[in-house]
Length: 118
Image (cartoon, rainbow, N blue to C red; front, side, top):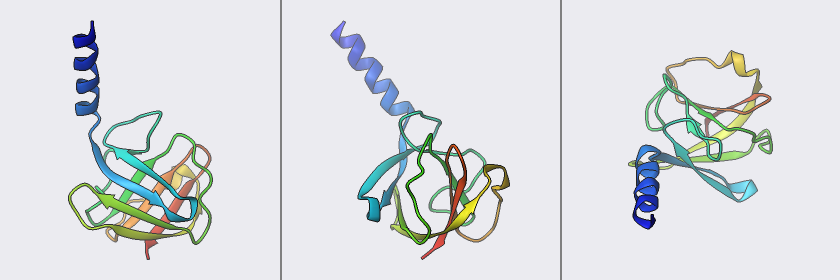
């Protein structure tokens, strides 16, 4: 029984490998970003830029509404330098766009938060 539980946990962790860490300095919070959908952690949306790539990196939070205009967001890719963003505004979740310039969009239950490099 104990061995099966350990194997199950290992499979879960391997399947849900973190691709980055996102930090909100004003809120003193930090989360691991997973590569697939999860209820308990932010996840990367398929078809959007990865954190270290140029383009719009879209991350989805189940329910996260505490970010304010002007807040700094630090995105630390697994194998790269930390990227600093500044929250510039909010848009409707359906209006998430693709762009060639570096941008970060956090999609929450009610709206999407748009951040550009600080």
